[in-house]
Image 1: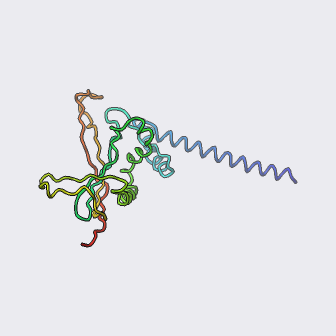
Image 2: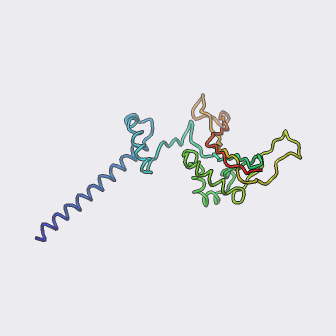
Length: 209
């Protein structure tokens, strides 16, 4: 009686093994389709649904437009405009990575990736606004927004008075304008634009006076 039981157990093990192999083969094939260049026409109709499935699994690769004429450049910063309970305005900025050393970027690469991906996800922006509300000014420094039309005695103070009345979040980035002439363009023909994309506006509580 032991031999049939052993055979049935082996068959189940072989079935599980083949299911795992087929699943891995499908995932590898899907990633291959997702990473194929966009100019390969046979893959165009299926790339979008495949990418949707892979994104749900956390394996989405998306486009890799790394080359001319319009490469993706992760040089953006997160900017927060904050108004305190006295209606004085302040600004917070994420690190400017172009000014940081190679070692600092190597050591803080997770933070750099976080700020690069934050603008893509509205829920992450909401959570980050919660964090800023708690962290400023003790753990995240802010600078006053100076209105140069005011006299020196009416300038806002250096200290932010909580609670925060309102907070606006933006993504600021330099972008290379696609060239009209030859591709790739000559260095002297490159034109960059500075863009700020609105992410979130939150109105908080104000203290009673």
